[in-house]
Length: 360
Ligand SMILES: Cc1cc2nc3c(=O)[nH]c(=O)nc-3n(C[C@H](O)[C@H](O)[C@H](O)COP(=O)(O)OP(=O)(O)OC[C@H]3O[C@@H](n4cnc5c(N)ncnc54)[C@H](O)[C@@H]3O)c2cc1C
Image (cartoon, rainbow, N blue to C red; front, side):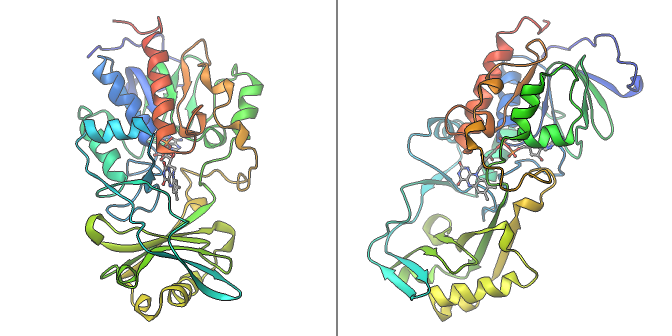
């Protein structure tokens, strides 16, 4: 590993706390972790600076996923990563009938037109982030270090420290970066505008997981899949682990529908759709992503313009080639998905590896 030499020190930073690396990655979601892993394997020194007390970002929960659950056929980067890290995968359960819940009542729909073939990760998608982190040398990941400033000469200020880096990677949703981080003033206004208008994928969603003793709906010939016009859950899927253990259903609800008694309404809905055996879950977990400070910046709910995903401004590094955008929202393909986060990481790594700013 190379030891980066610090350039001249910015006057506003405390020199006692200055830490120098080739690359500072902001955010320990799957994209930031993938960038760090690949650059470290290429011989660079990397620090990953993470605001939360945990890694994984929008990959959360083990084994019950409170963030991402699936990856789909054709998403070869995720598949390759599971294989390299020897993380077990299994197939989404889809066998049986689906349910439609509307004002006419609950109707059984023969077959399952709701679920598409998808892969799941044993232990939850956060197991992928954990396995990737286990590859990193100790001391790479710095938790509870929210970045609040990046200066023109690439000093990166967190809660406790200042880093200096040859390259800085912004591996968090662009709208959150422009909200929470003071960025170098020479970044083009058009770039800041694009970032501020880029929606945060799933940032205004609520994920609800109902955990049961057994996947009783399977014995009734149900796939666990449902669509509802009555809510609060608008769609439901089987989220059990391999072989039905642990047994769980999950659903999405719009963040705008949340209120103090929402759990009561969700329990009623599950009984309405799946019968009295749904009345006694081991637990109901409610994850409101719109209230997550380190995912969803205030005032960005309902941003409409998904055409901002993968915007050309994100494909070229800024700040003379030294500041890179690497969250799933910046990917040109599969933006929003884990696959997109890995695509963005791949572009970032190629750009840094091809740069003349890395000293050896
Ligand atoms: C409910 C839900 C369901 C989803 N379902 C699926 C699915 O089934 N399949 C799929 O492919 N995708 C799904 N997704 C999307 C998927 O989770 C994301 O594409 C992926 O996790 C994004 O990874 P990322 O690294 O780009 O960003 P993130 O995971 O958001 O990582 C960003 C990291 O930056 C950190 N951070 C933020 N601000 C700062 C700061 N100032 N300083 C330091 N660190 C900071 C955050 O804490 C976080 O760890 C879902 C998402 C949600 C929320």
